[in-house]
Length: 235
Image (cartoon, rainbow, N blue to C red):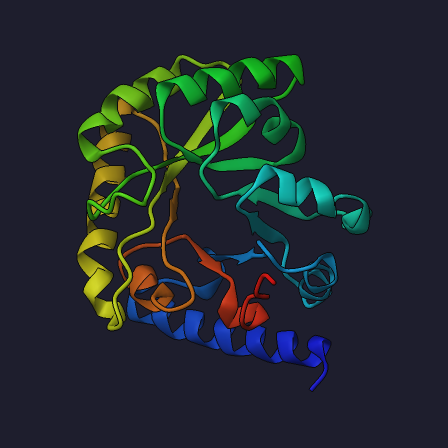
């Protein structure tokens, strides 16, 4: 099977699973956005996914995405998400490259992004990454710090807060992640009520657990290996 056929077949299966999970939660499949996690995959794979109908792509690192820019020229309508941890000193480059930053986790980063967006004369959409599960290797703001960060972001004129994102611990049994997805939904609902704004996006769920995430209210799922296959290994 060619890469074009493989990605098309994988996407068809993912869409079927999305539709079933959406139906179980009383929603429509078109309410859930698939973000193709293209980190470590070459530009050719991204182009194939684009041709198959996907428009949202997630990259983890500024430098890696910069290296793909020339090869990705001309993909009109594609939306580029930064989903990995972002260091404040790369905020300017990230604002220049990406349509959305989905991993804002500190006041200092928010301020840097706001200043960089002002220089670029644009408003950038962001998500707050919330750290659930207590894993030291994961980034994100603790639930206890969410209100302080959100209220600071609301004071940044060049940032538009769209919702929350999380990466829960990995479990062999996908349903074990359900409490974390439910917690993020509740945090979002509470934050939106207190701020008096709409926070429509819940970005949660990946290749192994996205159905559970959809059942708990995910509006965006981040799919990598289920779409593209196994990630290339470094030499």
